Amino acid sequence: SDELTQPPSVSVSPGQTASVTCSGDKVGDRFVCWYQQSPGQAPLLVIHQDSQRPSGIPERFSGSKSGNTATLTISGTQTVDEADYFCQVWNSPTYVIFGGGTKLTVL
Amino acid sequence: VQVQESGPGLVKSSHTLALTCTVSGASLSSGDFYWHWLRRPPGRGLEWVAYIDSDGTTFYNSTLESRLLVSADTSKDQLSLTLRSATAADTAVYYCARESQRTTSEGLQLPDAFDLWGPGTVVTVSP
Image 1 (cartoon, rainbow over the protein chains, first blue to last red):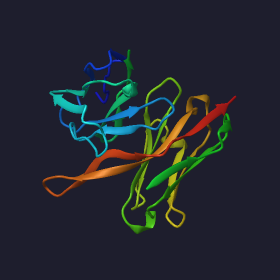
Image 2 (cartoon, rainbow over the protein chains, first blue to last red):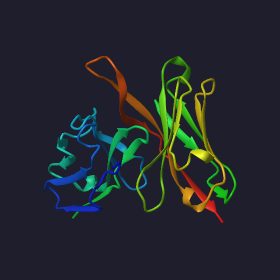
Image 3 (cartoon, chains in turn cyan, green):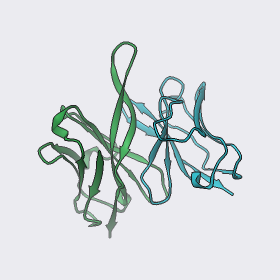
Image 4 (spheres, one colour):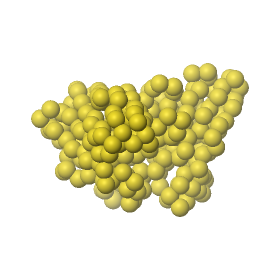
């Protein structure tokens, strides 16, 4: 299957740890990227190559993978982290696959 | 490097949607490039639309391919997207995004991530 499955929503209290999962057959043998999209903003790359954090992304964002499930973890979650999060892999022939997205609520 | 999408905002159903992505701070004619168009319909997730690179290679979302054309004008540092026979299902925020590449241990260049996005342009297809 070419699908990536994410939970529609995750809730976390400020200062706690949030985990967003991304599952699918393609996850196990491909690098996973994660994007944060705040309301009214363009997506922002927060993790690439499963666990690499681009320059400028806070250290509280981390990525991991086990089998066919990738996880984005936000430690010490802040209210500014409230956003939609999407996982993504490169795939042929469909070329690019995104997960359905997870709405992270910080309350 | 900055990216800015532009478009008509409102398109009538069955008409053609035409968008432009202008790149500034770097010239498309100065080297290899790999750019994509993506969109996010209201209330839904991100959807990949199309790809174009400096060799002129294009890939299209199979569900849109029959209506879609992307091109690049390196003299203007612009990318273009045209989508014919627009319907309400094409209503979305459209983004252009740069693809970064990684080098494997075997020396292969492969896609890595969408590392630069434009702010997006809203397109509404009206009945």
